[in-house]
Amino acid sequence: MPGDGGGAAKRHAPATLRNRDAIVAVLADWLPASGTILEVASGSGEHVVHFAAAFPQLDWQPSDPDPAGLASIEARRADAALPNVAPPLALDAAARDWPVDSVDAILCINMVHISPWAATVGLFAGAVRLLALGAPLILYGPYFDPGVATADSNLAFDASLRARDPAWGLRDLHAVRSAASETGLAFAERRAMPANNLMLLFRRP
Image (tube, rainbow, N blue to C red; front, side):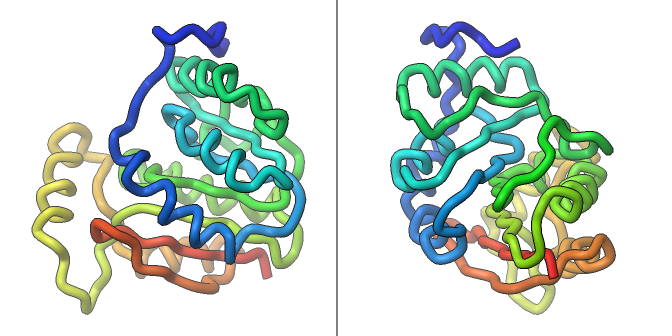
């Protein structure tokens, strides 16, 4: 269960403060004008409360598979006291059944490289189940892009991830796009982001 909103439950991801405004600038172009946005793998909860403040016309549904993550999200939600952030859901992207029936967009930040490949495939399958035609799935994070030189920092990051868990690591962008296509999603757009990250837009065709 999520925590009671106490400060001890809060996690902090330093990269959040560095990337959140750049992400907001792209979300302003890609998110729908109204509706519910499901964030998969909300982590510390820092992103979702920032986005909810930036887009008050949208309802935000955070989620995470980790009980400690859920506690942190709930603590930050309680602090922010924003009316458009729902209590977090326990959601494993790799699972066949998700605790939500439909949403108007799905956002997933920095999960693809810090999870088994099954989580990415499950994310795409969940998007096809939940999203209406034309609705967006938005990803953010670092990727290997064949034909584009990989930054040394990304190579070092990939090596450190694989040392922690061999199932983790930066994914090949073509493999990600192929998996999305095979699941039933259409690749729509890519944006280069600071610190050698990308934002990827898929839609339910």
